[in-house]
Amino acid sequence: MSRLSFLVNLLDLAEVEWKQLGDLADNLDSHRKPITSGLRVPGEIPYYGASGIVDYVKDYIFNGDFLLVSEDGANLLARSTPIAFSISGKSWVNNHAHILKFNTYAERRYIEIYLNSIDLTPYITGAAQPKLNQKNLNSIKIPIPCPDNSKKSLKIQTEIVRIIDNFTELTTELTTELTIELNARKKQYSYYREQLFSFEESEVKHLPMGKEEVGKFIRGSGLQKKDFKETGVGCIHYGQIYTHYGTYADQTKTFVSEEFAKKARKAKMGDLVIATTSETDEDVCKAVAWLGEADVAVSSDACFYTHSLNPKYVAYFFQTELFQKQKRQYITGTKVRRVNADSLAKMLIPVPSPEKQATIVSILDKFDTHTSSISKSLPHEMELRQKQYEYYRDLLLDFPKLGKVEA
Image (cartoon, rainbow, N blue to C red; front, side, top):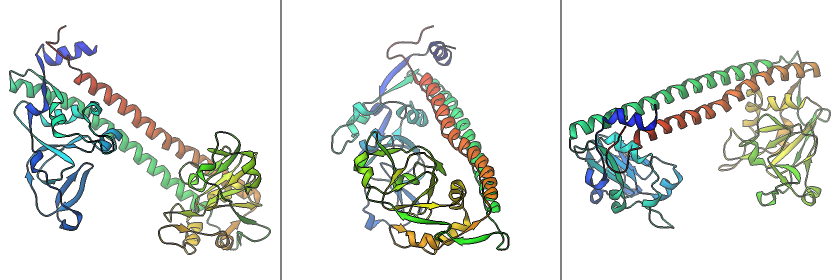
C-alpha cells in the first residue's frame, strides 16, 4: 500500500487542519517552579526537569495527566533525552521544562509521538544556552484530522497511536529476547571459562606471573591522545583497552609517528597489554593480547606482559575470577583505581602444558566468537527495528499541508 492510499483509508477523506500547539493545549509555563537541591525534601513525588525525573520530593504542583516538553535546547539538539513525554499523577516541574494540558481536540499520546518525530531546531533560540521558549513551542503546527468533529478526530488520532505503539511494543519484545539470549550466553561463557581454569594444585603449578621463567611486566611510556596520528606506528592507549579492544587484537585503533615510536616502550607480538588505571574496579587490569606482527607503542597507565605462555591463554586468565580475586587485594587509590606492575608480578597463574593451554584457548575462542556475534547483532537488530518504527510512524504522520487527502 502506498503512503498516499494508506492515509486515504485511515482518514476516509477527512479534512486535515494544521493547528498551532498553543491552540490545542494550555501551556502552564507560569506555574513551573524550581527547587534548589538544598531545599529538596526526599519523597515519592517525581520532580521533572529538562532531562526527565531529576529528583523525588514530598510536595506537588500538578495532579493529573499532562505532556512534558524539554526546554533545554542542548538536550533537544543532542537527542540525549526525550523531547516530549507523558506524565500522570502528582508531580512537580521546574523551569527547564514545559507542561501542557490538552483540550478535547488533541490526544496527548498522539501529540507526544508527533513532537518526537519532527526536527525542533527551527524553534530553538540562543547559542551558548539554546532553549525552546513558550512562544516558539506554542507556534509548532500539529496536524489535526477532522477538526470539525472532535469525536471522530480523537478516534483517528487514537488509531494512529495504537498502530505506532504496537510497533514500539514489538520492538521492545524483540530487544528483550535478544538481551536475554545474550546474557544467557555470557553466563554460559563465564561458567565454562571458570571451569577450564580450575586446576588443582597437584595438577599444575601455580606460579607468580613475574617469575623469571614465566614472564615480566614492563610499564608503558608517556603517550597522550594529542600524540595520535592518522597513520604511522600502531599504539595502544590504556583507555582504549576497556572501550575498544576485546580479548585479543592484531590491529590498533590509533597510531603515533615513527619518531615518537623510537622513544616509546613497545609491546611485541604475543605480549599482553594491560590497563593499570581506571575509575572502576571492574575495568582496572583489563587486558588485550597483541597478535599483530609489528611492535606497538604502549601508553603510561598501562603495562605490557612479556611471557612464555600462550598469549590468548593469559588474556582469558585475566577475565577469570581466579585473577580478579587476586587483583582486588592490590587495588589502590580512591577516585582513580590502580594496580601497579609490581603487584601484578606477585599474582599466581596456573601453568599447564602448552598443549593444554591451546585446548583451553580453542574452546574459549568458540564461546568468545559466538558471544561477540550476538553482542554485535543486538545493536544492529535494534537499529533496523528503529528504522522500521520511524518509517511507519512517519507514514502515519505525513499529512498534507493543506486541503483534503484525495485518492
